[in-house]
Structure formats: C-alpha cells, structure tokens
Amino acid sequence: MRYVIDSSCWIDYLEGSKSGEKINEILKREEIFALPINISEVVSKVKRKKGDFELAYKSIISNASIINITPKISKDAGILHAEMKPKTLNFGLADAIIITAAKSISAKLLTKDEHFRKFKEAVMVK
Image 1: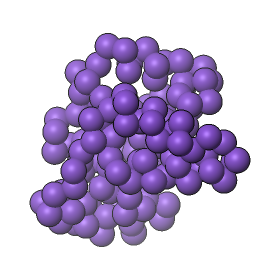
Image 2: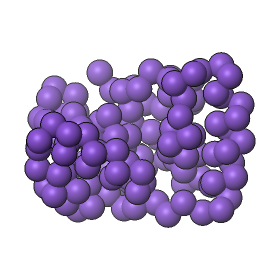
Image 3: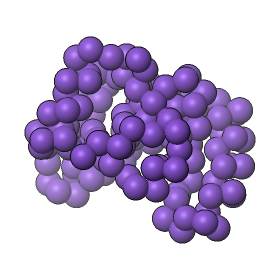
C-alpha cells in the first residue's frame, strides 16, 4: 500500500508518541511518500519547539519518496481548495495540495487532522 504521511503524523513519529509508534510500523512495511510542504511544516514546528530540525528533515527524506507538485496537481488542488474553503474554514491550500497529491498517486493519506476525514483517501491515526 502507498501512503502519504501528513505533517501531523510526522510530528508524532518524531516525538515517539503512541500514534508515532503506529506510523513507525507503517514506515517499516509500506511505500511512503511526503511532499515538500510537509517538510516545511515539520521543520517549522520542530524549530519553534527548539527541537532538532535537521534530524526531522533527515528523518523525512530518508523514510519517504518526495512527490513533486506538478501543474496538474496545482490546478486540481486550487479547484478543491475553492470548493472546500466555504465549507471548512480551516482547510488550507497546503491541505488541498496534500490530498490532491495523494490522490494523484493512488495513495492513502495518514493524518490526524479532522478536516481530512471527509476524504475516502484519509486514514485517521489516533
């Protein structure tokens, strides 16, 4: 199975939480992907918490293939964002890019973010 790991799950993985342990098990046996925006979000969060952002960066790069954002993904994400934003105020453009990219490679999205629950590709991690 293919999985795109959302930033919320990368953070749990890096912190070694209970849900992070679940992510670790998935990393060991599945095909894992991340997006450049996930790297940015995780590095920012870790740096703000005064953590080792270089280790966070290396952990993502060494455990995931990086999805390049194509013009088609960008267009489709823009359309999705325009449709979702009026219904879900905290649904950001980065969220639209992440779910659209997961769909583009027929992957599931591992996430803790509730606003992804509406998508069949989302696998909610607790």
